[in-house]
Amino acid sequence: ALLGNGLIISAVACDHHLHTPMHFFLLNLSLTDLGSICTTVPKAIHNSLWDTTTISYMGCVAQVFYLIFFIGTEFSLLTIMCYDRYVAICKPLHYGTLLGSRACAHMAAAAWASGFLNALLHTANTFSLPLCHGNALGQFFCEIPQILKLSCSHSYLRELGLLLVTACLVFGYFVFIVFSYVQIFRAVLRIPSEQGRHKAFSTCLPHLAVVSLFVSTDVVAHMKSPSMSSPSLDVVSVLYSVVPPTLNPLIYSLRNQELKDAVRKMMT
Image (cartoon, rainbow, N blue to C red; front, side, top):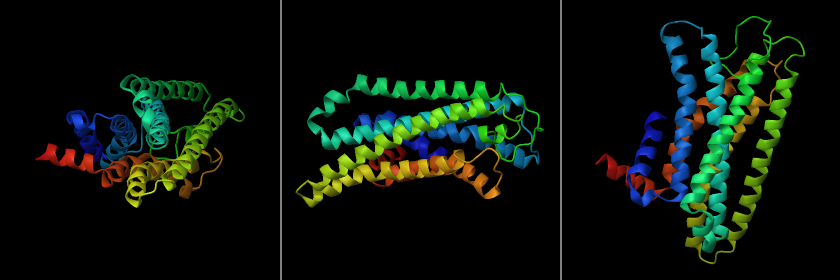
């Protein structure tokens, strides 16, 4: 994850040929991937090497905040990247107008700001709850469902309401992505040349694969009830916190010849 995302960030920042809206949002996506995996994995490695299973209270607060911050920002960025592909394929003549440098900067800033606000609300609400069922989490990092299991009876309903609001917002993002891809596929199928269709699909399929991987693991991990404690479900949290940041650079670089050329040029 460190190597792949680090190479993408360096290549996009250093190669002026990659200073496009699509690669600008990809750079931001790599930053969120680095942030999310650096939030959970280093502490887990530390506990494993030193044979401990502890984390400080403030360390737990920081993990919850940064994990929600980076994951929320990532989903917003994936939605924006879907809009980028929609404009590029369905409204190519308006691409320069709708996705100018200022518009891209504003959309990226909105994604980071929304992630920060969402993380602040959830973290403040979760750690204001009285915890009266011990201090042992059934997870290798701190996350809200595990902390809610420790709260007193009925005291977590307020946080569940906030989680429901967030779930509705995420569902709205998901509907936007699905609707956009329906329009994209309809436009691609109308392209007369097979080469044109192949090129259009090749720019969309990596994004669609990343969205599918991110949404499937994240939804299963967070939509389970706080009272559920199945180890097989807890494994999903490992998947959504580790697998997407590791695979995203591979998925995006496999079909992106410009990015591969930039990385090759930078390394040589």
